[in-house]
Image (cartoon, rainbow, N blue to C red; front, side, top):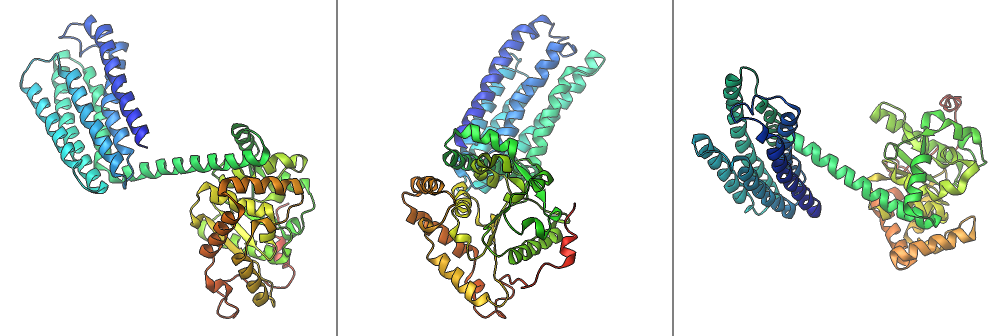
Length: 458
């Protein structure tokens, strides 16, 4: 962030100096001083649009970047704001005769620089940013008032609106930014989201590149083109009862934009299907109740192209990064399947927040106590080296990836166990079903009801 702020500030300052000198020689010198502000030529319009953007737009853009808790970057921005003030004053008014307006500009710019310097002395970032924006707000208010006076005066002499009015929109924009903390907060949220998404996607792409033994950029490009999702309401129990390939399900899914899918469904095909379907419908109902719409999810059976399975498996980590959260339907076999654990590995490697990971435990009616105890023991004794994979070469390759990222498999196993402990409280493993009813999912030991099939849209 600090390097980006330095580069952005230097870029704006250099462009401002170069553009100012160029326009002075190519445009301003062609007109008389009495008529230069009356001319609406293309050159004057470009000059009076880009110069205020490079000066005042720079204050708005650069000063918005420091996060609310970043003291160092905030102080760096203030330093560059002071430099920009000095450069802007020198280039704008160096040819101006010393009069009341010149003195007013000098005093206002000097006071703003002084107040910015004082704000940089704050010991925490929030008051520092608050005083920085107050100083900028007062300074730009004075600038806007004097600009309006200049426009009125020049327009009266020209007999029509002066081109100086083009300086007003950027000053007004900066004033709005300085006076609206909500705007700044939204901008910070957007920037943070973009940085987080980009870093997550790159981390996922690096895992995908290792899994598929291909360049990161290539797998990123493939994932963007192949990423799909499906409305959960378009599925019924028969669609997910087993893992037998069904091309018709793939045709029901549709292309999706990375980052727009609601959830990545992580599960083991070896877990009991009735229990899993009931848990999936329970999660779906909660989502619809909260959001008022059907969730769009990535689920392997519907979103993997059976005619090109290897390519989709290679892109799997990026698919996961393209979903807003991961829902783990964890039954007694989940921790034994290496591809399931690789999904958890990608989640860890991306640095995702733990609140983006949701567990649904799959416990069959009448066997809750035994299965809960077995799952608790499996979480505590988890060892990735004991996981199974359909192809031996896939297991060897993925264990090498894990070893390279975590030094050895034991460190990764410990990390995964920690995630399980943080995501599932001890109450989830209470062996008394009545006490754990609200914390632990319990499925009915019956076949799906007829109305469940109505959720399947043919």
